[in-house]
Structures are given as structure tokens and as C-alpha cells.
Image (cartoon, rainbow, N blue to C red; front, side, top):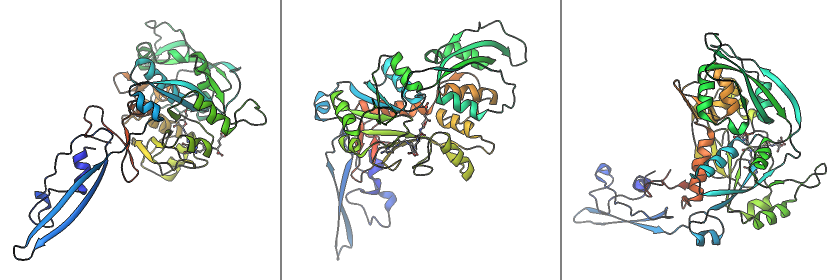
Length: 413
Ligand SMILES: Nc1nc2c(c(=O)[nH]1)N[C@@H](CN(C=O)c1ccc(C(=O)N[C@@H](CCC(=O)O)C(=O)O)cc1)CN2
Ligand SMILES: NCC(=O)N[C@@H]1O[C@H](COP(=O)([O-])[O-])[C@@H](O)[C@H]1O
């Protein structure tokens, strides 16, 4: 939102003829762009002289410096030091992976120094060679349990065992090969595979937390929280705070973490913990609303729109200040998986039904009718992570967090 339009409701031209009758004549002062400044306290004083019946609307905008949200004072002093991030996951960690990918590519000026999960245990091969038959366009009935199972579990490997052209003829153009989850984002190869062929793939699946598996593969330390009787090496709330302090964490990102963050951590990191929720909060949030349950509730309600919300975390589920949202349509024949895929991928054009499954599985692959582009819920979190690490998150005086535009500091959203 441009700062000028932001204050349009607060301040008009200092002296205008009868502001009540001629609001359209109001012109707005150009607000100087102040970094970290978003608080506009406007004082009106209305005075008039009876004889001239001239109204003067004195309007002064006083800018109060508002410290940008950042880590501890050290990180503010440090200026451009990379921000230390802790990410919390419970499942496959698709948002975590996207943020990590953006860090590796250099678009996020941060470093994920620790991953926290409530899911213990190494990956054990639970099932293997589930042949996921190539599906027949035009209508594909998604096996919800199968897809939910896939997303919840760590996909250890995906082996493309066959490629069938849409017309049923087999293809020799692209040789089937084994894909590790880390490779599924090789968009060129997948572009070829997902766009042009029906894919038959074998999935080897494991238990545990795919996000933790990805962290281990990328040499990111994994810690267990909360501690429970069946997992004694899990941390207590106070130990978690101590550990994160030791890592010098600046920001905490919840990315599909399914446990309540304790008040000790919320108070230790005020306005520094973000969460992504797959509905337009405050709708369809709170205890019991997570994962596919959210999308099922949205569809059952008849809501016409849904979409991801990124919000600051307070002591309760999903009640913290909202920072960013995206809107996607709920289509009349949506299944929860198709809605989840759209919210994840924030896509308006429907991808061909028979790609929905694969796109959903890969969570970051989307067909825009001509080619695979990776648009996703994850894009929103990456944009927020970029703003966080560049200290472009600021708080309006009324407590609403805003993201300052990178190119034009006068714009906020
Ligand atoms: N203090 C906070 N902690 C967490 C928040 C938050 O806003 N404040 N967000 C959640 C993430 N989330 C929605 O975005 C969410 C996660 C889980 C639940 C839930 O009902 N969980 C179940 C247990 C589920 C399980 O163990 O598999 C429960 O508590 O009974 C609701 C919302 C993360 N933490
Ligand atoms: N209420 C929290 C919640 O439902 N979060 C949602 O869980 C999914 C986790 O996916 P992942 O297993 O790929 O990380 C994500 O879609 C996220 O929005």
C-alpha cells in the first residue's frame, strides 16, 4: 500500500476549501519515505473565522519512528548480517524446503540454523514400490488417503517406471529415472515428465518426518520438541528457549508444525515467530484446524474462496496478527486435495486434472496450460522470509504488521 494512500484516510491537504463539501479537491502531501517509519499520528485542528466563513483544516502528520521488527538488538546493530532462522515442521516440510531453496539461491538473506520437529525417529522404509499408475485424463479421481499418506510420510525415492503419452502411446523421449525428493524440483526434467506424459511411478515411503530427513540431508541440526514420555530426548519449553538463544536465532518460522508453541517461547521471541496457515484466517483456524482438515472444512462450508495466511504467533492457535494472505477460488467440484493443491500452489487456472495428483505431490509444481512453473503457497512464505531478513517488516501504530516494498519504500502491503 502506498504510504500516501495509507494516510489518505487520516490527512488531507492542510488548507482546503470546505473539506466536507469538496473532499475530491483534497490533495495529499507526498510522504517522505522513511525506512522503518509507518506510524502516522495525525492531529486535526479545525478553526474558522465567523466573518470569512473560511474553514481551515490544519492537519499535521507526525511521523513517529517505529523500529522495524528484527532480531535482538545485536541483529539491528549488525545491519546486513544474515538472519538466523529456526524452522518448525511436523510433516514433509514443503514450506521449509522452499525457504531453504530460496536461501541457497540467494534470494533470502538468512540461514536456517536449526530445524525443530515433534516427530522423532529416523526414516524407516515402511512401504515400497507402490506403483502409482499413470492416470487417465480427463478426469482423475484422487485417492485422498494415498496422497495424504504420501505428503505426511517422507518420500524416499520416486522412480519413474514408465512414460505414456496422453494418447496412450509410449514415449522414448525421456528415459525413466529415479528421482530423489531433492531432485523433483529439477523443473526442466520434470517439465518434460509432468507436462507431456502420464507418469507411472514407484514410491518408496518411510515413516518419521520428511522435513527432518531433508534437514539431515542438508546438514541442518534437528532438535525434538516437545519432550514427551515416549521421546525422552525431546526438550522442555525452557530448554528450547535456551537452545534457540544459543543458536542466536533472529526469527522462528512455523511450517506445518502441529503442536502449540509454548508461552515461554512466544514471550521470549515477541513479534518474531511466524506461521503459515492454509485458510483465510480468522476463518477455519484454531484447535483442530490443520492440514487436510482445514480444506475439508472450507469445502463443507460452501466458502467460495480460500487461501494461505501468514501471521505472527501468539499464545493461541491462529489468533496472531495477520501479515500476508493470498486468495484462491474454491471450485464447486473441488475435493480437499484439489483445494489443498490450489492453496499450496496459489493457482487460478486449473491444472489438468490428471496432473493435479503429481503437482499436489510435488507441491511446488504447477501446470499453467503451457508449461510447468513453480508457483506455490511456498512463494508467499519465501516473499515473507525475504522481507524478514531484509528488515522490511514494520508495525503500524494500530498494531497491524506491514511489509515495506523493496523497490519503493513508500509502498506497503
Ligand atoms: N502458540 C501457537 N502455536 C502454534 C500456532 C499458533 O498460531 N500459536 N499455529 C500452529 C499451526 N496451526 C495452524 O496454523 C495448527 C496446528 C495444529 C493444530 C491442532 O489442532 N493440533 C492438534 C494436535 C495435532 C497432532 O498432534 O497431530 C491439537 O492441538 O490437538 C491447530 C492449528 C502451530 N502452533
Ligand atoms: N495449521 C497448520 C497447517 O495446517 N499447516 C499446513 O500444513 C501443511 C504442511 O505441509 P508439509 O507437510 O509439506 O510441511 C502446509 O500446507 C501448511 O499450510
